[in-house]
Length: 286
Ligand code: PDD
Image 1 (cartoon, rainbow, N blue to C red):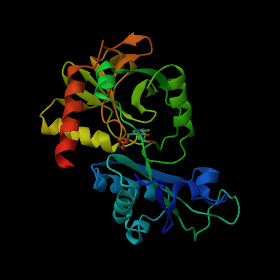
Image 2 (tube, rainbow, N blue to C red):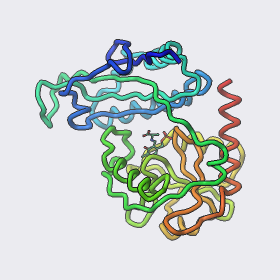
Image 3 (cartoon, rainbow, N blue to C red):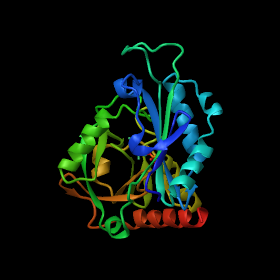
Image 4 (cartoon, rainbow, N blue to C red):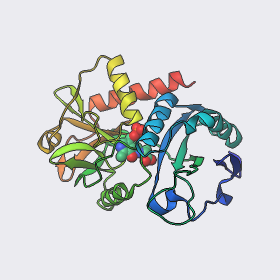
């Protein structure tokens, strides 16, 4: 990678460390914006259509006209960042806020001009040994708002919950709303019982993860048994296997939840899916 990593901000390309934003940007003042995190495999953009679809949906739901994306060629910008920064396996972060106001005001002006930031981020996925060992998770009340399907940059609740997990030596917090699983603080959650892979159905209570979609595609490709359904706390703790999915780590087996050991190491279905995901990425993003 070149020494000075270049980022895109509102039509300009500049070095990451030198790129700055106004203190009146609503993204900074109110968390008034949405984002995407997209994996780059072998210089190619992963599931780009699905990511752009979700971005459009997030924009629409916070009343920013998605037509904004017609004037900005996101794919071209990402490819330019990949070329210029020499990204092979990396992540692209897209952040669109409602833009800069004249003064701090909850009410936004009609003629807002969104801020568009696109930059690379280097998250290092877990290696195979970590995946085989599995990770610990804690249970937490899902006290977030009821629009968790929007990929909003207002992530305070997620940040507090993820840090609580981290303080307890856990990778993730599995969230329960009214006693039923929604998702993780930064991932979607699946469980396996008697050979059937289960995950909560999509709703306003969880993010429609692109990795979740990818795994559902793989589940169907490999004819595995699958169900989208309500999952109670009791069913979750009684699972044979649990795993989390996110763009940074497609399959992370969870072997312990609070003090309950789910399995001694990653279960066979979780490991199969992990391998299917690796193979798909290797073959499709050559
Ligand atoms: N987060 N649910 C939540 C609350 C998340 O924050 C994420 C991902 C997911 C999984 O979505 P996807 O498969 O599209 O990555 C589910 C990203 C990685 C982040 O905030 O950095």
